Image 1 (cartoon, rainbow, N blue to C red):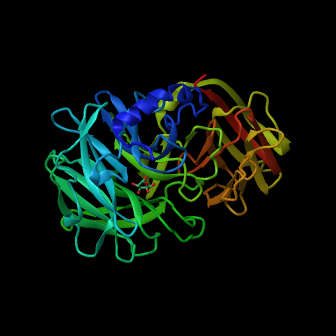
Image 2: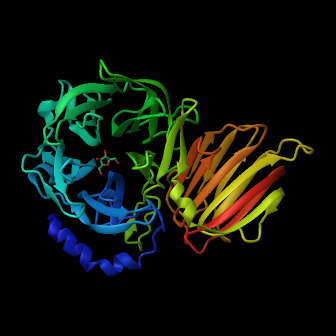
Image 3: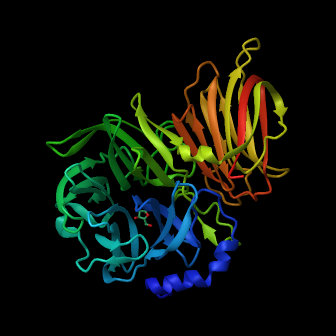
Length: 492
Ligand code: FRU
């Protein structure tokens, strides 16, 4: 058993600095300094930089003993690791410093609000909300922790599942946060709390209740207004599938609706998956200084995360691209943060190129690329059956994305990506298209693919473990397709 003290953790990080630096990691998706990473935490803009903390176990590539890792960036894409920010070293968080969020205080300090987990008898854990205050590098846990405990819970709600506070500031400068819990049947509840200072908190309302349709416990809530609507994000556990919208297991849900100020309740009008791929969970958003709502998620899924754990690697887990989100036509749209465009280089483009059977295009390859394509039928030859783009490809391996216009399905398939695990490797979603015309933006960053469909109407994300030497990209069409494509290298 390791000593869980923060100084010990930081000394350990120093001792393994060479290992950490020599690992091959994604170029612009945040991966852990070393060890294991899950949820994004404390995503905030503080003293001129973005701060992104993460659920972190430095000591192995397995989930255990949750710390908070810490990184900073000026553009959300080039991240610099800082020493670990929190270790589970107090009685109230001895089992782990679970997910939470961050905000700047009026005195210029940075406040972290996180879930402290401690063990009680019978193999159960108790979860409370705790605070640490710091300067962007070092954080001191508040002497009055925990700041929210079971005493604040309405009757019938669980103190064993009571976690993931997401804090924001209201126009009157007071703070609010949403926290997840569940009822005695295990069904998720999102609670709203308020505070004048981040230290003393008051229960306000049950913002939203899971009636049982969308999984059971809801993790990592986030709540904000966007384009005249209110949006509640949750990551439900134990979902049952619904068509191609929701899949079994842990998922992500975006509810769009309105906020009833009097009752302090959220009234959803529509819900949808946030990401239709294989790996995305526990997203968290911030409002950037220039007014954009940017979301980042853990590009992994608790149900499928044994997939990429390659024994020689000393790290596991990565964040998604930061995505600008908006609400249009009652749906959540996502696009990669515009900062990415400044890292595009070496454009290669083809216009109205015919795809029939297999095709490779000179100059189109790579594992760190941004590729925009439009496909449409050749109207003289009728609607094609299937169009496929393969990437991270060599003689043995590939990951593919296939569109079947007659079914309106888009499928990501990493079955041949090199995984030796029998977990989910394929996922499909229904997409909109005008008679076989589809727009795709595919972003690869070594060990992942993110596909933005129809200018961000849907996104599919998947982690892949394929050796980065496999950098082929190829196309296939059953029936004639006309394709426009522009491909950029990123970060050259
Ligand atoms: C989501 C989650 C959170 C929790 C954290 C623990 O992935 O289970 O609910 O705070 O991870 O690492």
